[in-house]
Length: 282
Image 1: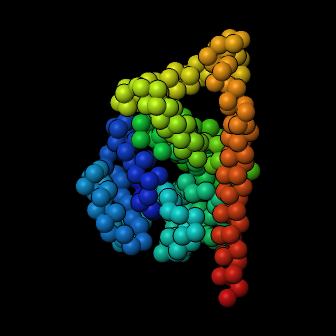
Image 2: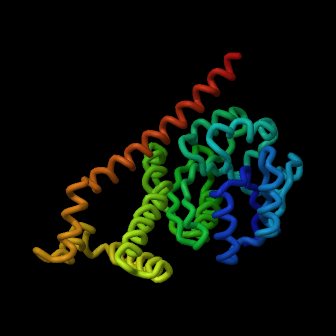
Image 3: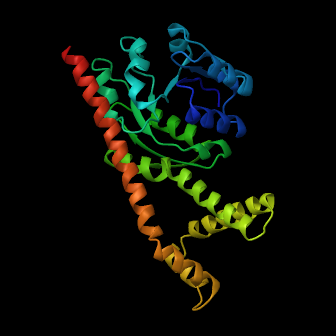
């Protein structure tokens, strides 16, 4: 895909997207330009690892970017966009991959430019082209721009268009979800070692087991509940383990975990809007 991307922010999500695009051979390094506020070392790391372009020159960033991706921390987004507040091109889509910041927040930051804004929540599985990326469209996004954005994220996994009102929930479920799965995997690996399984073998066994379970659910033939009940014979080994999970309310804890992440995403957006309101009235 011969399409130039400008990425504002150089953290783990930006790197995951870059790695995924290069792995899928969908976007070339020379078509990707990255910037951040002050961390020269981080930009050097990305250049060495992926041969992408890096700069802090505003004119170069504007000239290069046919699509802007805002991938900084939520608290920093206004400062990150400040150099472009009067010069962002109305025909250049701006994609936010930040938690909490709404499409409306970004549109109102450019009140006279009608900037096409997309809010997307990819996850770091983009590295292996297996991200789940929900996204919501702003008022000024054209069908052509939507098609381009969909293609960009399809290169690193699956996509789903959702209402903007659900994006904080998407952040909690698919954006942060991989971290909870990794925590579960770590626990299974630790248990494997305790019962005498080699560490390297344990990692292979656990990762393939979770992959197989995920693929089985994706067939949509049976629900997760039906599938685990199929495995759980009365008085058997699975039931013995399940009794511990139920005793410690693991399912309830996971539900509360995701609800807490959902609340935090909303809090991040609210706190950033308070800062913006204070800035306007100064």
